[in-house]
Amino acid sequence: MEETRNFIEEIIDADLKEGKVEKIHTRFPPEPNGYLHIGHCKALAIDFGTAKKYNGLCNLRMDDTNPAKEDTEYVDAIKEDIHWLGFDWGDRFFYGSDYFDKDYEYALELINKGLAYVCELTADQMEEYRGDLTRPATSPYRDRPIEENLDLFKRMKDGEFPDGKYTLRAKIDLASGNFWLRDPVIYRIKHLPHHRYGDKWCIYPTYDFAHPIQDALEGITHSLCSLEFEIHRPLYNWVIENVSVPHKPRQVEFARLNITNTVLSKRFLRSMVESGRVDGWDDPRMPTLCGLRRRGYTGASIIDFCTRVGVAKANSLVDIRLLEACIRDELNEKAERRIGILSPIKVIIDNYPEDKKEYFEVPNHPQHPEMSTRKVKFTKELYIDEDDFALVPPPKFFRLKPDGEVRLMGAYIIKYQNAIMNEDGSVKEIHCTADLETGNGMPVDGRKVKGTIHWLSSDNTIDADVNLYENLLTLEDPSKLPEGMEYTDFLNPNSKITKKAKLEKTLESAMPGDKFQFVRLGYFCMDTKNKNTFNSIVGLKDSKGK
Ligand code: ATP
Ligand code: MG
Image (cartoon, rainbow, N blue to C red; front, side, top):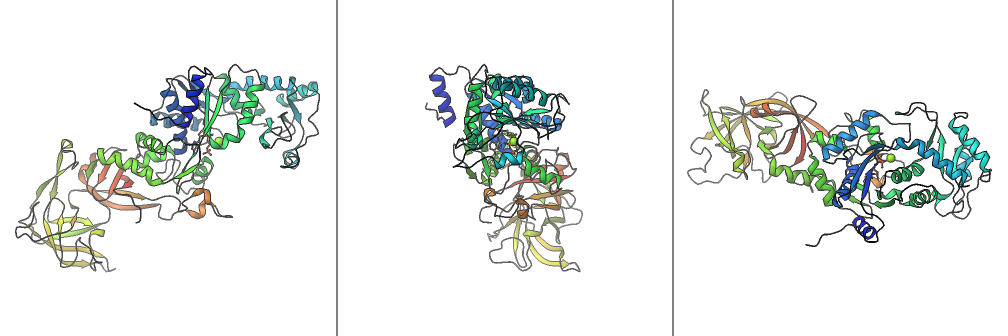
């Protein structure tokens, strides 16, 4: 059987064939400054998936070398989300900060080799001296003698200087066409406590210096990351070549996941939380893994989505409806059917006795008889959905209307008689008569009834809040933010609408996280935080063109 290979696997196959590596070892390095989003799932699927495919290992490493924004709350949440997706790092859990001592030693090594120097330019000056494509950068401190560099760097570490007074820069190439090689800063002074080391350090390595060292020390063979790091790769390789690390990992970049109407950036997502525009990181509208979970997505459906998107070298924009199709396909198979009436109006069956009850048997899943059936009660007083009735029907309206007949799903055919209105002009109740001969069959005289609507007996319901969700943003391509505008200018005012619904009484025993199809409506998940609340996951059909 021929197996297809993505470009990363082709690279790995070649490395294995040439004997450059033996056992494949990858890592996933999230920065614990927010919750994981679905973009991270793509990276996770690639990092853990590639290791698994080659019978190798994948480390989980918290990239916590920048002390500013990190928090243990995020560390725990990240672990939980990764386990939820079904990935496991075993005992290979690390922190980037595990290697602070080593980073420091390697920095000393560079200084001793004449490959790093202490620079005194301020951030503004550095910008000013950065040069451009025709002019090289400059630094008056580049030729500082090694002894002086060693002395200053040690004193930086000992806390003698304020933030920003000095930096340590790698001495690479001030004229390079790649600006990341123009003597990049590899250490800066930050008098900030670290979540694991407190005040031990007041100098911190930059990501570009620390990351290759972490990879090398952990024996990573292939450091897989998203495309924005491609331009940093020469620097990654420079570090690996110039400090005496025990292994030489290889960085390979893949396209980031971009989704329509969705911004995948922790910074933006945090701003949505902090400004109160959403109800926390796990708001069901958020593209975070905890948000998707609360919405009703399963880990399997998200992985399925990442698999369908595939691994590519070039960035592209994926339609959010592909993600919706993945959960719809799964729930279409698995979710039991129930009845929910989101905007209930009362229907009275005039010719049905007051004290009579009947039970109609309905399937829990029409395609899966083994999922059994349940009985729904029929009485004189029912609820139907407001949308299934029109006093002045548009053309081709086959639901309940004056002079019309409609089938109540699985039960009688009813005929409109009259409607009683509220003072505000809304419908209070609709009076109908039932063709009591029909119960679940065709009319005896062979006349055709086109429409079928769902219904509930008024004493077979529970009250619930049902949240209907749409995309948070109306901007389809988030990379095309118009000049001078912000994402928050594109917030969808209908992204959450709460309905006071009547649901089938059997849902009383549903547990938080349980998922159902509400017939004719879509898929819904019982909320894990608020009682008697259901969240819409996805509609029954692709909403395209609606
Ligand atoms: P954000 O901008 O959301 O904070 P990040 O890249 O800074 O994302 P990290 O925590 O540093 O977040 O990311 C960990 C890993 O996840 C990195 O290797 C990064 O390449 C990858 N990653 C992040 N976002 C995406 C995405 N949209 N698609 C694919 N991979 C991603
Ligand atoms: Mg980051």
